[in-house]
Image (cartoon, rainbow, N blue to C red):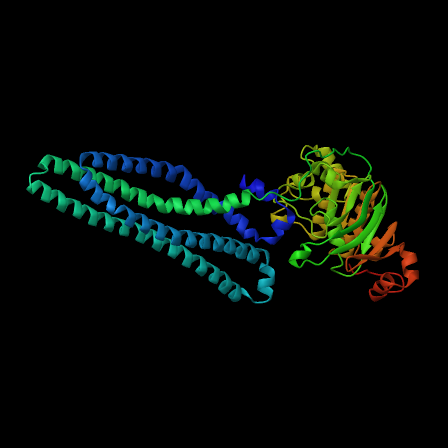
Length: 492
């Protein structure tokens, strides 16, 4: 359930928190809660009820002696409360640092090539060591609280026992209590002391579990802001017209100092059309693509499909209509066939191979030792960049969505790979409403319309020829990246 809450969370929330924090919650916090509620609650309840029953019987046997026993209860309660507060604080700190440690370890594994080329092994070892030290300090504080709480409570209990025995012995000498009654009461007192020790020890387990539970339920209680309306309309599969109608967007509210990323952007993509977005980095092009599948919701204006606001559509149907190919496609550590069929798990082997053939991927896949059963490796690292890109295109072919989003899909490839991928993309774009972020003019000049985005606004639009002739920002970008009189790369 915790993982389900995480994977359904808003992209903004996932991007704002360290991935290690989520990993720590799933692996460690959940385990502490399970331990507390499976073992701790049962035993804590059992020993607490036993303690109450024994004290009640002691009060019935001799209320004066029991009154002496109860005088120590406030002291023990104060000790448990004081050490419990320290333990909660230390446990929370340890959980936070466990998340930081998970993040640091994942960063080092992902960035190992950069670390080695820059000779930063010692620096990273020191950085991770500092995180480990901070976590260890919190763990030690928690252990200290656990270690002192029990003995301190036992000390108070021993003082109470000594006082009871002294008073009971005086009563026996005065003839007010028989030796048998004295022995029976001391037996009850020992039983109460044993139950008290168990309750004290279990209190530490419960404290850790409750602290972890607060973190877990705090995460589970957060409802995603991106959710479909109760009366959301279905969207039948078929050609769609995509439109942005005076769209503005900011990643953070203006009250929190958030500056607008997009301002009054309007564009339309008809079925079979290809619209290119170009312009300087940071202009808001990728944000436009993120708005279409509702990774984020617009601040003002509307994104529509066939004239209907996407916020009024079923979220599943909306995303089923969109295929996305990015600059660095993600592959799971699964078979190549499973990666291609990720958007259509029930696809047949013939359909998978047909999609791979359309993406110019079938030949290299068939040449692998295990063919389509070959595992891609973690994040697809067993394959080259061009191979990963063609598998991502095959995935889009198999999904057969009417809307295609291309986020610099060829910018990171070598010339040979780019030619293969570009040919596959041209086949993929046929008949679909395609919105692409362009990096090279070879992909831009064939677009039906080009929108030049700068500082979140559309500053120019038109065909390649008309924009070059206009002599504005597009022409300047083309001139800056010109390799010869004809071949030009456009910064995006």
